[in-house]
Image (cartoon, rainbow, N blue to C red; front, side, top):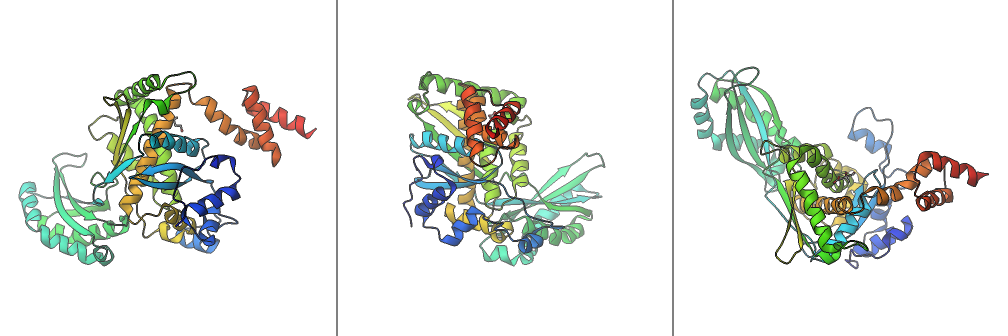
Length: 429
Ligand code: MEV
């Protein structure tokens, strides 16, 4: 075990090698783990990549950053994030520092229950069929569990049968049977789909209908993670704006997202800015997370903010976030990709629910960072400052020129591709 303090001052000022040494000191990772996090010359070998997906011609690198300052349920955590957008890692780290001042994040989660769906059509007496299926629940669950020994060995498995009737659809009436499955530490997609396919013939027999689709639902609203944070106004203040004013600005920003779907979509994108990079770093399925998050945001028939922000009696800003988080720490790319393995080791999580809790905290942190910036000076100044290096590179700068071109553009407050090209030409001359 290392120092276990995620509040690493000046982390951003170090070079990548020095940062890796800090990460090593934090968690006592071995050199192989560090090599995997560093990526080096393609830590994911072409041979391995070729077995992961089809038609492989190469691998594709993205930056892996480490967010600092996170304290979740009293534990200090360094969070690996893989993402192309500047200011996400900085924003999450900065927000985590503010939250730290209020005691850190509290997080919890439901059991890792997922839903598999079997669509049945051509049933003559829908309600009677529904009763028959429910009466055979135990048999159907046993059939499902016989299909996936690995899940049951882990203590998971099919738990519950639900029946939903749609009297009308573009093709006529249909029945949809839900199999609720405890996926333990697996994301579970393959086990769920296999179970659905395994029970479908028996459901056809019982209902007299025909099974078409047999697939998991990505609206995993039985597999939720929740985060909460309390931020004292003092931690939010800026040189020119009091903490109380910033709290009010953030509450107005939240109110905007609560009522307006156009704003809620961007607000929720800001939450996912914190979550997707952890999902990618740990080899999980980010499309599933995105689909579940947005569907959950519309669960009451109107798309709204996933997070809620309030002020408590003492004037502290209180943020909560609850959303589906179907992640795994066993199976799939989490096991095959060496960097995903090292990322999970750095997070030191023992269960998929613990990983989900970290993700939801990273989401709440990103949301807070974005709202604080938006409610005060706007995001462009900070963002463009960090984006300047990408613009410098796109304009042809390399090596030490990158930082120099970026520095000059920030100083001149003129961060534009044309200006970058001029400075590159000037410095080269
Ligand atoms: C940019 O990636 C994310 C933000 O647009 C989120 C938000 O508006 O809340 C800044």
